[in-house]
Image (cartoon, rainbow, N blue to C red; front, side):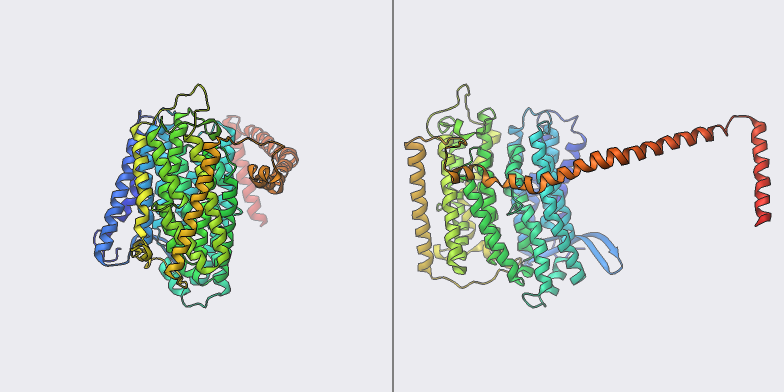
Length: 633
């Protein structure tokens, strides 16, 4: 069933194409040679992007805001009727274009990066499966279809983080991500159950229409939104469920770019933006989101100051940027959060792929203290990485400037303290990103025996395209202050219901931009003086370092605290059950049951001697016993 929009029924092709790529590369992975799996997987995602773009123009030309494609009736039990349906509207189309567009570039880049890996075919099969799951998540017309995609990306994340499973540390990182996501997913499941109990439906349109009749602050809405928030916190790596994301850098760099920068970790932001009507009715939950986002943005940014692994720096940067998206959500500026999701996908995917190019050139080395002098030897990587650094730092006219400045303006409208703290986090981001840039590309090469070289075209072309998006992506939403009409915000108005804040004056907004820009320039100059002019190289952990410096270097010992509070206790409990229950009780009981069964079988075997006379005697005896039994009864 399709809602009167021509050609929209082809929407199922968007997730189906990556699924087909997964089936082809997965079932025939032993027969595919060289780059065949990469070409097939990349082609499927490119085709999916083209279909998504076609759907965008089809919906625009139809004059409708949304269309629902019901593929089949899925769950019909009593009054419960949950169709397997896809929702095509401005929010889902935005996410579809990001997932397939950025995803296609990352797939193409992976052909060069993963060349020569023994399990490259399995890698591309898993990447296609992830893309399918993520598309299902953003295209679902109800919370249950969304949840299928939600769990699918969790599974694929586990597989891809632990892709190089021969390393025990990588397996641990994969398990950590899986378990912490399951904690969040439990809250999400409870939220969906409570949604159905309250509204007798999990379909977006029905839930939102019923919820609009409730009073703001209704306890049931607050509880539902808090449960859904738990799921978003786990998936989008917010405090306290954020420690899995930095460890997830154990996977191949394209995995970090696709899953942990551009798509999967934004699933929580998408879900809250999709549920904007519910969250507008829950002011308590919105305040909780602001606190979580602000704390995460600052904590992750501070930790990033002392990290020396190139991917770990970008990982904590991702956590911090997700915190800014949460701040926007908590302020009720849902379209602003989605806009930052869009620009972040451009520049963070670019930065991760640029880091992968550096690691590829350095023979697998990831310590930025051992790098340096790569600007001349890797010019394409340098200039594209510079574009990504300027974008994430919020330097105009790069894309990050438009989205981050909009978040800061919304924060100022709401509360000046939130603005000051958010601005502080932005300055810290600028510091550690330019620290990373200068240590990697400036100065002299510090690792002997390595001969860095520019990556092949299959890797540099995606970098160039992403750098163009990182430079010009912000023009999608030029504010009226700069002569634009905020097209991106207007585009999303029919899909997300943002709260309307008090408008600040143009002069105040200009002042905020000028203050931010002056401070950012001062930070860049300071970092240049420190790491280029003075050529300081960060030291490792030493006992002589100041206490706070050691605290930041060790990531505030949060992982150690979690291990002491939870992991060790569960480990002790597991050991107890293994040694005291399984070994001393369950194993002997199971062994005895097996032995008893064997003895019983031996006894029964004696009743089958193969003697016909004995069988006749047994048959007659059985008939006589049966007759006696009947007579007695």
